[in-house]
Image (cartoon, rainbow, N blue to C red):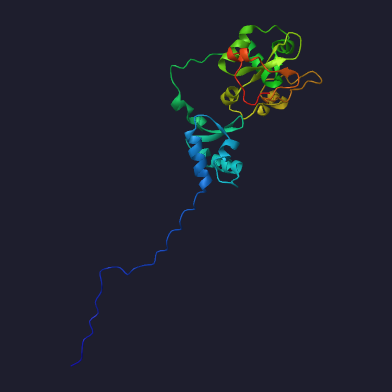
Length: 239
């Protein structure tokens, strides 16, 4: 008697080959280290301080630029202020952290003009400010700028009377969102924004601003007693 061949079917589907997803690219360790240091610091950090805690051979600046690009679309951005790096809330989200009780104080025209002259002509004395403005500068205009932390006494001019010289501060850069005073607009940019008349006198120019902390040859440091009285902050690399 012939044998019957029985064919059975399994209810389970035949196994199919599934290629494994490629592993995500491993993030460079120096980026994680930089993140940790910058988030933990209450103050902006310069590249030298960051490099001291990273493995030798790491290109700190290139790593910071890459980290800045990664965070460009995040709720916090990596920004550089006065040559130092820090995380800040994205500018378009600043309204989330605003406080309704904050009172905005509007600077007078004289104070704005004084601030602009100091920013572009620093180090500059009160008499030099008055000469540039063409009018007498009240003590209050300079005092209010010192109180806001936007300007500081740098030293004294080596001239009769030893007048105090003034310059901008890191707070000034941070408030206006610039890395250095050298990033301030030039003549063409000021014309384009309507802040300068297009018909300027011949030879008119805007100086190239510099906020180098080192005293110039025509400056001398403030006396220790003046520093103790709060006339000017101590500067570590001031000569």
